[in-house]
Length: 360
Image (cartoon, rainbow, N blue to C red; front, top):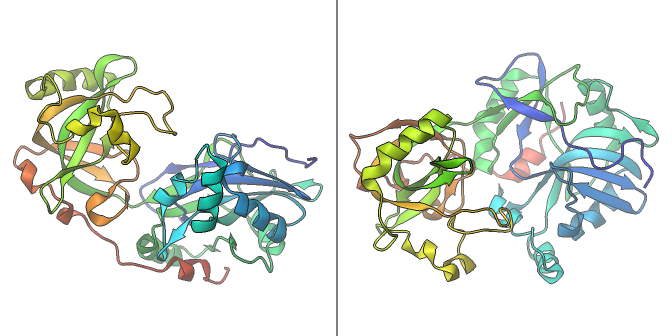
């Protein structure tokens, strides 16, 4: 491979802002695996956000990228899997598997797509120093005639349309909106763009915590919601605390500490076999490796309010897509009142309609 921009490249990132800023290029925020594609003839490398290759996990995309991308190019975008008209992050994570036979089976059963939204190099020319506007023009020209599963991300400079997208696209599993300054060059591994994400609140049961890697203070609180059968389902964690607050939480939660997990709704987490058939946070995964995910059980008696951006999974087995943000304790709420019914469900919107939106 001999390209003007060689792998690995860490992608340009975005920082969170409260509202959609004016005077920029706007795109949907895709909920998948960020990927930078290097293609030089038959050679294709799919690089992850960290720079590590993802090529072996998406053989069907390698074939499609050879057919649909320019012969020599470097393209930034997102790998996604669409199921039932929505993005499906669960099925996407299943693709990161050590066994080639499993990868090949899933490539056929749940094929991935690639949504392109930036162009870093074309032919012998690097485009990283040119403006966002010029890179977008070059990307549109490069992908004229591209067919699924390779897509050009819809983009606009109309802020009113961007606001409409922000409200409408969530029903297709999208995360929000990305705003890109028009004169912005491509800056790897810097937060030079802006992301505007949906935020909602929920009252959840605090049923345990993990210790912080630095010592005997709270690393993250384990959160639960009750389903219609009365089972407490794990829905995620909240973890953004100062070190002072982490130490205070250990003292605050001490009255709820259980000597063992016996009798706890999540007692099965302590059993190794539980992790063979369910995604539970009491043990390592292919993402965490050997990271210590042991936890300390609490009597599920306290409720807190958290902010979250996105739920993934079926309604009564769903969980927070990202780490939730602690807002306050809710002594006025009973644990039994913390159910999935309180969660907003966005109006469904077919992702095919998002990808079919005309350019501009």
